[in-house]
Amino acid sequence: MTAPSADRPPSGAVRRRGFLEVRWRQLRRAPRPVVRAVASSLGAALVLGSLFQVYDIALDRGAALPGGDLRLGFLAGYVLLVLLVGSAVTWLVVPLPAAAGTAKRTRTGWSAALGLFAAVPIAYLVLVVLHEIVKPLVV
Image (cartoon, rainbow, N blue to C red; front, top):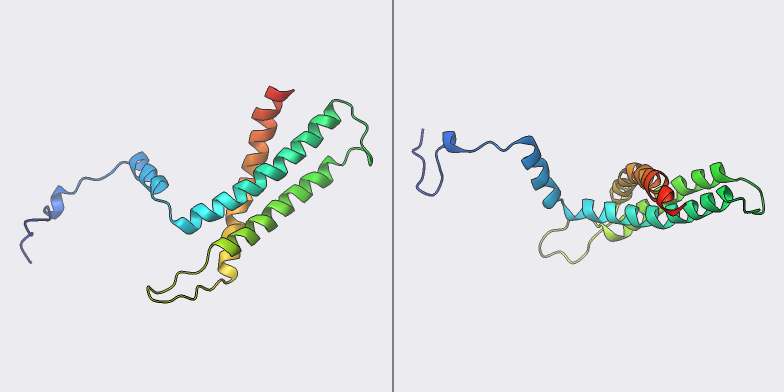
């Protein structure tokens, strides 16, 4: 067994962080690919969710729109478009890591999968926030 060095505290002196402190640190130091995937999905969900919300409010106010009440179809389209746009934009902005001297950065299906997995909860959460918080404030 080696003696502890002067610049490192002994192993027994390491302070254990609490659950919330660990999660806060993870939130502050999120990996760039994850931030980009979430941001692309969030942007798509906000734009498309706002359009859906405008349509929903117009129908609630009695506007006679062509085709009648197509909220279910628009909702399915919203989810599909958020998944596709989030996945495609993430594929474009999140290349695979490359070595330090390598100029070529490749993209694979893993980048698109990262965007898809980020888009699933974001599509739902944005819709819930728009419908349950924003809509009562507007109407």
